[in-house]
Amino acid sequence: MHNDRKKLLLHVCCGPCSTTALERLYPEYDVTVFFYNPNIAPQREYILRRDESKRYTREVFGNEVSFKEGDFHPDVFLEAVKGFENEPEGGRRCEICFRLRLEETARYASENGFSHFCTSLTLSPHKKNTVLINSLGEELARKHESPTYLPSDFKKRNGFGRSVEISKKHKLYRQNYCGCVFSMKQSATYKGNV
Image 1 (cartoon, rainbow, N blue to C red):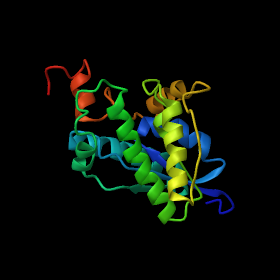
Image 2: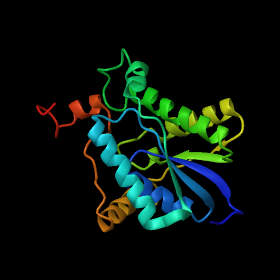
Image 3: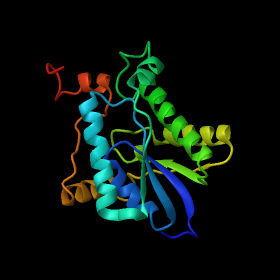
Image 4: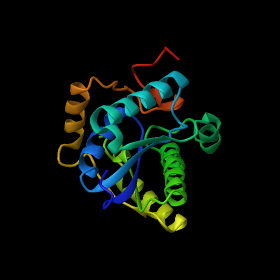
């Protein structure tokens, strides 16, 4: 491990989203992957995404990158988005979800001596609100005082294409809905299967 590098906590939501982010951040930071996603449903999907993220991290980085899992309490997410269940994908419900996960990432970073935190949420071309995600991160960094939020847009410079390439190479599971029960129901793939 390179002890001279700044400690960065990287929030990830799945294996594929962690690929490009880790590839770009690892050379400059002492990265710890933080899997905190109480929004993911059903539980078997959560476990699959967590395990794939952990597998990729271990396979490529060994002990050079730590993997930490936050608490999985879906009721926390469901309570947070109460009243916004029927929002379209990318609407207010998603903003609440981003805030919930980034809030916990900022808190964990602050309490565990990280100098920076970041999220892989800016990789997906389906998350067009990179400005929102980065502004939430910066707001939460101010709230928690000690860690600095590292703004990103991992989809730039063909980041998503690179993620697809790495995911194929490592045979990573690639989900076909964002993660929550509402996005699953809205996904064309899952219509009639919920």
